[in-house]
Length: 184
Image (cartoon, rainbow, N blue to C red; front, side, top):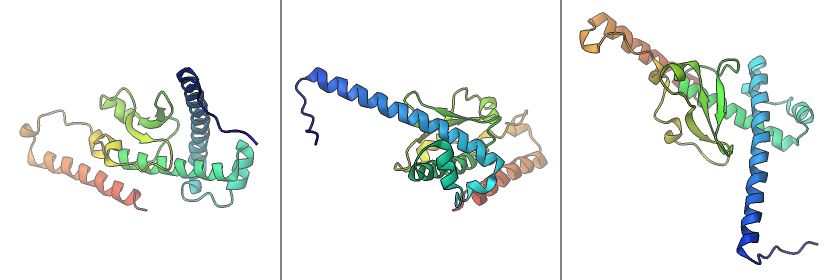
């Protein structure tokens, strides 16, 4: 039986805390690589986006993790797909879209061709990496699919009525498709 750790001085406390931070950072980095592999697998097998029923045991054996960990990883990968669809109005494509992680692997965001064209060089969004934290509207950084519509080349004041109606129609179509895709 192990005895409880009792700190003797401030230096020992700081060393233990630093070691635990490094350990958790390493575990989050390993989980991030598993999540990226799952996102690529979900691209080739879209039925995994809905449920991992029947695939959980094989996935846990292939990744050499427990079934519970595999289940949490699948849940997070599905949540990433929902958040991406809500932010960009389409599904995640691993070949062109990136999931960007924070320096300590605690948060993630997205980088897509649309976001780069809109002027966001770094990832957009700041979502918590764990499943226990619930996301909020602030995580989306105030962005939605409408944010990535290319602005018209002419000023709105100079546009004719037909062009304005078309622009409003595109925005409402994106908004409606987003609502349909993110319903639970």
